[in-house]
Image 1 (cartoon, rainbow, N blue to C red):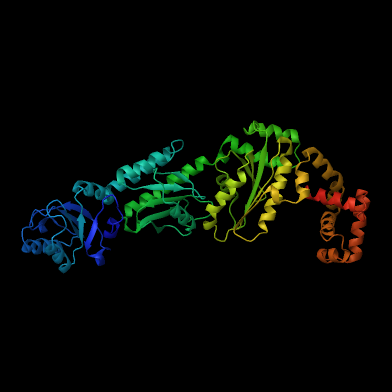
Image 2 (tube, rainbow, N blue to C red):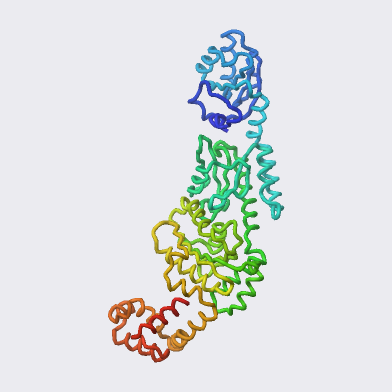
Length: 499
C-alpha cells in the first residue's frame, strides 16, 4: 500500500508532518524501534514507529534519521507520549534525508496501528483467504454473502459492499457507502476503477467477467484504493466476484419451480389461452391469493439478453413479489396490487439513470385489474411501454393515467369477450393472408392509421390506388363490414389494438 493511503484511515488519525512529495512510496511492513541506530533491523519499505526514547539531543535525531534513510524505509511515525509534537530537530532531519514523517496522536496505541496495517499488508493471509473463498464458492448456495464479507473485514480489515444495478445494498457492513458515492458507482462503466467520495477512496469491481458495468450488473465496492493492493489482494477481489456471481445466480428465480411457472403464466397471458387456464396457472405461482394486480412491461434497446432484462425488471420491482417472463424481447411482470408500484419504479429509475449510458429503457404500467382482466392489463402495459419508447431521455415510464381512453376501455373488458371480438373481425383476414400470401391485415391497419386516405395509404403500402381499392373491397367482402362507416372503422381499430 502507498503512504497516502495511511491518511485515509481515519480510525488511526495519522497526521503528516513533512514529506508530502514522497507519499507515493510503498509500505511493505510495520516495525517499532527505539534503538539509537536501528539500521541493522531494516530491510527497506518499513513504516517505523518510535516512542522517541532514543532522543536526547539534536545529534540523536541526525543519527536515527540517517540510519532510516540508509535502510530505505518508507516513513517514520513518532508517538506523542514523550514530547507531544515531534521535536523540530527531528522534523529538520527528516526533511534533509527525505524521510516522510507522521505523527501518531497519544490516544492511538502503536499496537492498534501495527495490527491494522499488518492486516492490510499481509499478503500471505490474503492468499489463505483466497483459498477460503474458493472453498466457500462451492458452499455459498443457501448461505448468503454476509459470512464471506464478514470474513474479509475480520481477517483483512477489507470492507466490501455488494450493490445491485439500482443502487440497493445487497449485502455488506451496516455502515453503507455515502449516498453520493452510490450514485457515482452506478455511473461507472469501465471497471475496475477507483472513485473518491468524502475524501475517501473506494474501489469498484464488476461481478461479471466482461469488465464493463452493464445496466443489469451487480457491483463490488471496496473501501480503499485497489491500486495500492498487492497482487494477492487483487486476486482475492476476483475470487469474491465469482462468489457473488454464484449468489446472484442462486437468487435468480428462473431456476425455481415458481420462476418457471411465472414464465409460463406470462406466455399464456399473451397467447390465446383460455381465461380459466390463466387463472389456474396464476394460483400455482403463488399469486392467486391476491385479488388485484398491476402489469409492468419493460424493454431496453442496447441488446440486453432476455435473462438480464428480466433480472433488471425484477430489481426495479424489488420489494414486491412479481411473476416475470420475457416475450419477444419484452420483459413482463405481474405484481400483486400495490398502488405505490409506479413510485417504486420512478425511484429505481432515478438510481439507474446515471449508469444507463446509451441504453434506452422504456417501461409501461397498467391500471389495477382483477384476475379476469390480466390479459387486458398486460396489453395496456405493453401499449404504455411503446409510448414510453417514443420519448427522449434514456429512461421513461408511462403509467395507466397517461394512456388513451380506448386502451383504458379495452383493459376493463373480460378476456373472453375481448378474444371473441378480435377473432370475429380479424380471423377471416388472417386466414385469407395465410392461405393466399396476401397482406390484408397490414393494409387495413395502414388504411385506418391514415384516416381512410386512399392516396396516403397507397403511398405507405407502395401499391397503386386501384390495388388498394381492390384490397379494401376484399376486406369488406370477407368481414361483411363497410369501411366507409365510422362504426365499422372503430370496430376494426379496436380489434387491431387487441392483437
